Image (spheres, rainbow, N blue to C red):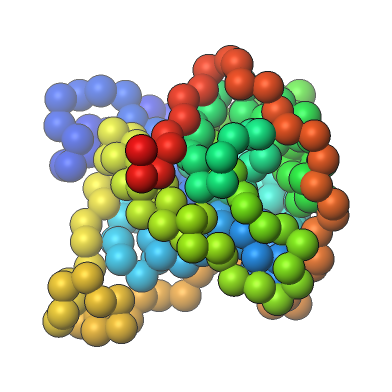
Length: 228
C-alpha cells in the first residue's frame, strides 16, 4: 500500500491526495504536430511552479523507459497528440482505465504504441496510477519533418494547459504562476525555470511512425473544440 499524503496547504479539507504526481508530455518535436505533448510540458515549466511531489517530464519517444515514472505515480497527467478522428485542434480528455485503449488503438506513431505497453505493464504489476488523465489534441499535420505546430494545434495548447493545471490543482499540486516582468511574455521571467527533470536518451527525439485509423468516441472521455 502506498502512503496516504498529508493534507495539502493548497488543498485543505482533509481529502486523500496523491503522494506523487507525474506530468508527462510525449511526442516527437521533429514531426510538426507530434510535438504537442512536449510543447505543453515546456510551457508548464516556463509558466508555473508546483509542489515538490510533482514531476514534470519530457517523455519524448522513450516508450518503455518511462515505466518507472508511471509505476511510482499516484496521479498521472499526460499531454499528447492523438488521432481521435475529430477536427484538427480539438481537445479530448480520457480518464483512468480508458487511457491505454486510446493510446494504442491506432498506430499514429511508434511512441504511442510503446506508451500503451507502459500503461499495460503498470496494470499487470499492480502499479497503475490511481488517477490518470490524458489531454489529447487532434493533430493537423504529422508528415512535415522539422515542421512546427500548426496554428490550430498551437492555439489549442492554451486550453489544454488550463485543463491540466485545473486538474493538478484538484490533485493538490499547488500550481503557482511564476512572476514575470511583463505579463504574458515568457521571455521576461523574473527567475529562470529549472531544467526538466528527465530528458530523452542522448538529448534527441527519434522519428515516429506513420498515422493509422482513428479511435471511436466512447468511454470515459470528453472533448473540446477550440474556438467553438
